[in-house]
Image (cartoon, rainbow, N blue to C red; front, side, top):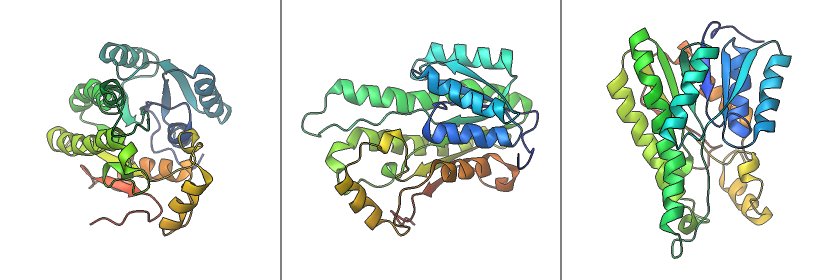
Length: 255
């Protein structure tokens, strides 16, 4: 345990069972937060995340919900508030990545990606915001992607829906920061290529090309993204809101 800044606070991490979400859960628990681990399908992974936190002396529980479903998201928040207390820290991390050719992508694929990546972010933030404003305290981080800022030059034609959904999350962060301040700070994180289950099927050829294009010549680690999320939720970033911070190892250099 490194610090206890979030002692007495409740954090909800959507998509918290694996990958970046799990790393975020562990980092917030290390700072004293009670952590609600949301998952949509993989209960075993969610239980592993919870058990890792409890094994280190932290407090956590797991909550099943498809954040793309408005009612399910609301029911999840009700359960978290009953069990762990009002949500002070929200990390809207749940998302899906589907590769679909621009010439053959179906409307159904487009809608499913938007339902989870964009609507899921909206449902979570919208359920959290009123309580945060009323209590005069709230910290939100929404996970976007570097592909929401610039297309993937290797497979731009296959990531239109995903990239668009993540660009919309960036716009949503800006609008919410302006509307919910000063009580609530809202920021985003746009990871580049990080070693997770989502990138496990990247071919060796593509991996070589992607790492060669990055200044740091490697994929990121989930713990590195979690550290940035922690910073944006903490008082060390007390004058920062409405920003989306890129963590991609120097893959894209943006103004």
